[in-house]
Image 1 (cartoon, rainbow, N blue to C red):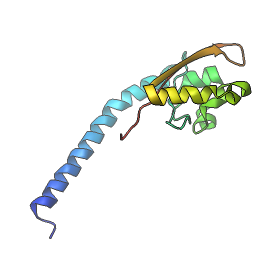
Image 2 (cartoon, one colour):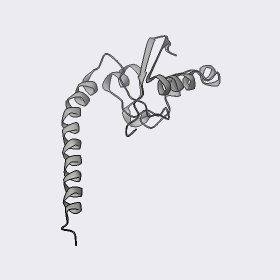
Image 3 (tube, helix red, strand yellow):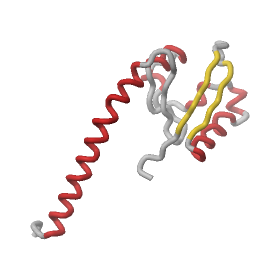
Image 4 (cartoon, one colour):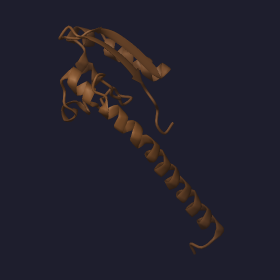
Length: 125
């Protein structure tokens, strides 16, 4: 038991999956470090539910939130109460989910110009 061709095939399949994941992480790490080092632009990713998943130095500098304060929070925090009541952040999120990206720009509360380009990727689909 445990030594048949099916077991060897399952073992090879698992080994291939682990090698693929390792390769992915090796390719992903330099890009992640690059994004985290950008200080002039806020760059962050959202989960499909609109919660902030990543946060770079530029986002901290321009938005004023530390990563520990904003990761896991809904991106609607970046909009006025009126925009949230009117459903503007949700429409952007729906568009990003439907088309893979959404873009918005305007004046932030501090009267700084902002532009948001959001992309949504469905990992595992």
